[in-house]
Image (cartoon, rainbow, N blue to C red; front, side, top):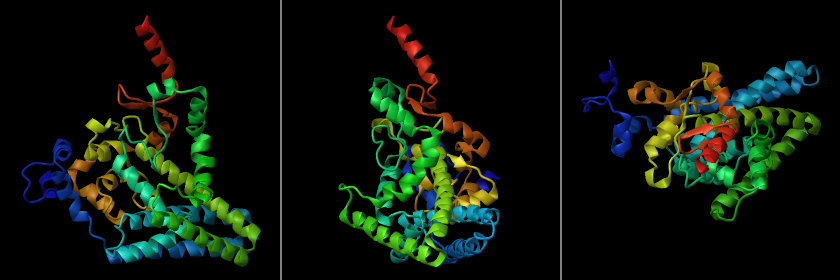
Length: 356
């Protein structure tokens, strides 16, 4: 049964040890799924952006009648914005279409719809892909993560700031809205000029979109609906990103021992969602495969996961299991696991015993 899923030249299943020691082993697996399909891409655009437009029309009509009639449409629209963001995300990886120009054009359009600067965001995201799980390069596009030792050695001010940022209330409510609606309106000097310009062009596009929405619906109605949709989309999106890299046995390593394939398969979770949520999140729950090869379009991720026995061994999270991830705050580097703040009591006790 297993051999049916292997390449013809294989005599035995490809193991994690194989792909960790030889990049050619995993590249020959993923290359089969890296070919964009125009038909699938076009269908995904149609079944995402057209329903999103219809939701806005429906919300505009039902808002004056009853907010309870509007609420289901807001929830659906929030899910469709997440799906739109996944299309934006694929365009930046040049995986959605074969054409670079087509990816860039659609990337800018979906970036405006999701309040995200196309080139600048993907510059930061590229850093994330190249350094995920590397303790010596915790840089752009990651959730702030400290080791237990680093936290203990920090000042009271840093400890307070870290606890504040890592609190679920900030991390999954205020933080996501601030990040997408405000923080992403600015760039940083260390980015290339073309990446910084994408922030300016996106801001101009967002301003035009907001002005059009206010003109068509009235500013109060538009602002209420847009904020509700953004709250749902940003909170769910940040939660997805969080659990894909912040689970108990997640892979972290120092630069000298860091391995790209290990960071992908052990540092990125397989978030097994119900089919309807998998659809709204554009298959990004197959995050282990995405990190192994960002050139695989989202509409090919599930097929790749199901076809290759190697991917059945990766960390798997369900919605129920993932809730425990919200309690994880620090990396216990010695035992290579994420822990909560309660672990500090045990850590301090062990250290005081050792010192004595």
